[in-house]
Length: 407
Image (cartoon, rainbow, N blue to C red; front, top):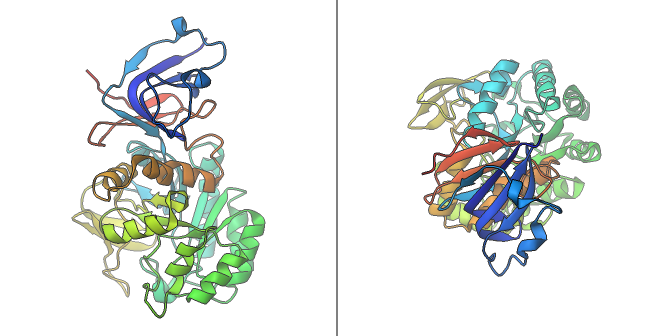
């Protein structure tokens, strides 16, 4: 028996443009047809009949949900998130990890890689094994190791006493502990073993990300030539961009091979800086991330980030004590808020924001054959937004996690 649903009437953001009054047909958890009811924007270049599922019987399309006045966008993909809903991926507890996953799903993030935080190597290996199982079950898209191979001068919310240089054997130990699910590792390439580790990660098919670094412009270029392809939360935890000493920021922004992560929560980046990065890199090379810790979706209070205590006040997370007290400790951001800010405050085109929130991170994580865009054959992962870009619906693999209440 075919489980079929049709979503009609909304503005649907497709890889080729925005369809006004678009129509999505979903069968057994997958998108089987995408058809505009009216002409697409001129740049789209699609004919209505081109996207009909061959042999589709429209008389048997199934129940139709009228979403006129709404937007339908692909489910969000977060390649850098530490936790949410009061739970942390660094706990090593699969139930706690699922709590964090479900918290972000409710805010439209239907795919995510779990990020660890600096810790003892053996502890990180145990965490990776747990997260690997969740990846193999389809709950996660992989593991991102953030630390311990980062600069003590730019450690941010990472515990300084646990940092170490990226010895390739230690780097390989963590990759192996993830049992084929390691997707990214953030490291400081200027440290001893940094460039060798970048080359090894690239050879293993793991993204080498430059972050929490005190690297120079020239050393960052070397890292990119060695295979680094991502800038971990650009601008944050790295030297500032100076007119005589451009540092890593300029190197990462100017190279077409590098995708830059941006945290659009209004705390980590001023809107003008975000707009500058977006304009220089272009929509193809930006990935919006949350870098969220356990307080995402929760109220102010005390939380854990790995071995660190974090105090959240006015939705801003900071290390509560120790040598890095007062440092920003990730965020409490969810990607629906990042989307809304990008469009309504930063003034970015909706299509570009969708690329940064869905298509680009899906491509980097190697899951763009299934998610990241609304196309026939892909999973029915989508988000419904109202005219103000407030989230009103979330679907994952054809199931409503948040069902739109439409009149």
